[in-house]
View 1 (cartoon, helix red, strand yellow):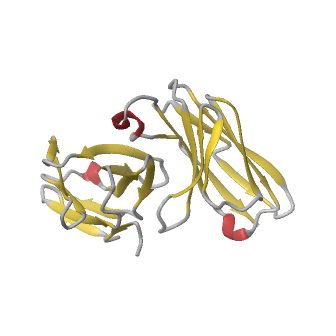
View 2 (cartoon, chains in turn orange, red):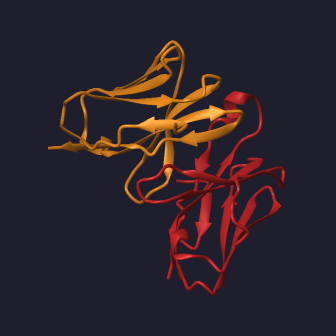
Length: 108
Length: 116
């Protein structure tokens, strides 16, 4: 089983729509969780950390479900600039494990 | 604007060549990393350095040889590579401190390597 698994997508959504996707992780002892964003042919950049209580950053909401070992990302009111690949990242003993990414394409 | 720079940005090399990738971070971080990203695959951690000391070698073939002369610079020396080594090679750094700080890694723009 892969350490971090994501639906590769692509999720094609119109501007203004809401899109959500999950990521599952295999190590129940994982300490912390993140979403990174990677634009085409660019480096990954931290989008947001994911906290146990759930957290929001503007139009982005992240949730963690430790019992079922998944995290989620929801994007409200999608913008064209949200088109990217979203990488799920899990910290195991200070080593980051990356998912292969979920591609989101927002169309006008 | 990224505080982590990588050169070259693109590299094409033959299987018998020797080349080096360079990474430099201007963020005052103490940990640096090399990752490999192949198409449609997750980032693969290759090497980790903390305070210039290698703390992780993720079963990387010896044709990849890292070097960390100081906390700001990281090299990846390449020799006798194979076509399947073609990928995006990303350098990252992270700050010292409590666990919350070391989680965040800052990536350079990567070197896109093609091995012919």
